[in-house]
Image 1 (cartoon, helix red, strand yellow):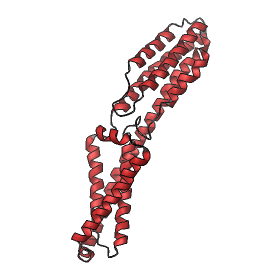
Image 2 (cartoon, one colour; image 1 turned 45 degrees about the vertical axis):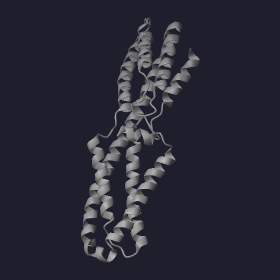
Image 3 (tube, helix red, strand yellow; image 1 turned 90 degrees about the horizontal axis):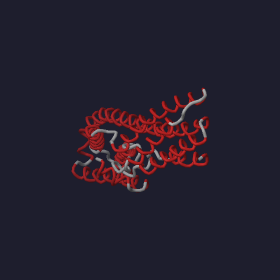
Image 4 (cartoon, rainbow, N blue to C red; image 1 turned 60 degrees about the vertical axis):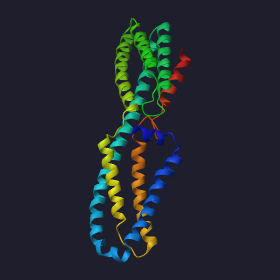
Amino acid sequence: MSVYYSAIADLPLWATALIILGGLPVLAVTLQALTRRVLPPARAKDHNDVAGFLVAVIGVVYAVTAGFTIADQWDNYAEARQDVTEEAYAVASVAEGAAVAGTGERREITAAAVAYGRAVVAWWPDAPGEAGDTVREDRAMERLHAAVRSVRPDSEAERAYVSEATGQLMRVSVLRGHRHNEAGTAHLEAPMWVAVVVVSAVTLLFSLLFGLERPWLHYVMVAGVALVVAVNLFLVLLLEYPLVGTLAVTSESFRELAREPASGI
């Protein structure tokens, strides 16, 4: 799946929308034209009631499947965005809190925080599985830990800072692991993708089986159903990898981290 996703993720948003939101309705209308030749409206009337009942049942199944899938993906996307922001802010708070330490210690902690922000920006993925090397991140994190440990607290404020900074860095390690996982792991497993595609295809297929005497009304109905299916597939695809693509969580928080503390060095 990641191969197909990478091919689509490299396209501009308008091109992706054109392929999915435009291509599927066109395909559905084309199939509808072929269906009307094989099964003219006069012959289709006999099974319209049955087809209508089945479409209603399938429509409910489709709505539940697509709805829960998109809702779950959005929750995962929102969580990834929150985790990235919290990670950057946690590192920034360690740098800002170093104001209570000595001048040399403060400079080193701030420099280490800036280095970490720049390392994360350099790591940020452009496609699934194409994130940069984590070695630079590892070194920056080790440097930040060492800088905090180098603080020898002589006051209550410094002791509170060391304790708080140590806790923040532990939190950063956890959030960093989440970020790396989100970069290379698809949110939906293959069976879920199969379920979404199959339910979408069956829903669209049964909409082709109605026999309406007015062709334009029939085509509008089929195109409308296809557009709804296309919109859902479009959203599922865009939210598949939270850190990659058009709607991806960006590295802006870390870019700010790399810029703002620099003035305090």
